[in-house]
Length: 126
Image (tube, rainbow, N blue to C red):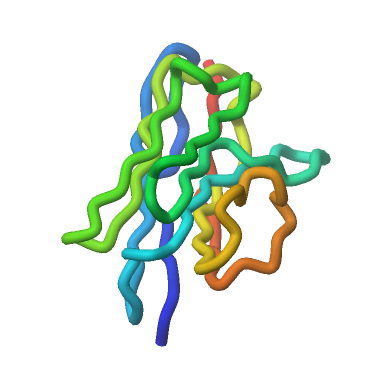
């Protein structure tokens, strides 16, 4: 069964770092656009960092530029979100998603993409 599974969330102090992983199984990531999204309590889901299938188009939300980096390893069939200098406003559930067609996934955080992960909780608090 094809699916995405996120891991790596947790509790971290402000200024700390986390690396989220998204493991794809049942299909190959090659040829898919990839996105990381988050949903904070009582807020709508937003696009955090996305890349097109070719990697030529990338997007990072203004709030995370210079702090978060999306990377993918097609050999391992995994996607990562490296998060540095985390702040309380980064708290939320983080989801990865992939899509075969849409190249600008972050523009549609509610998109009906090919695959969504179940989410991993990130809490930034002292």
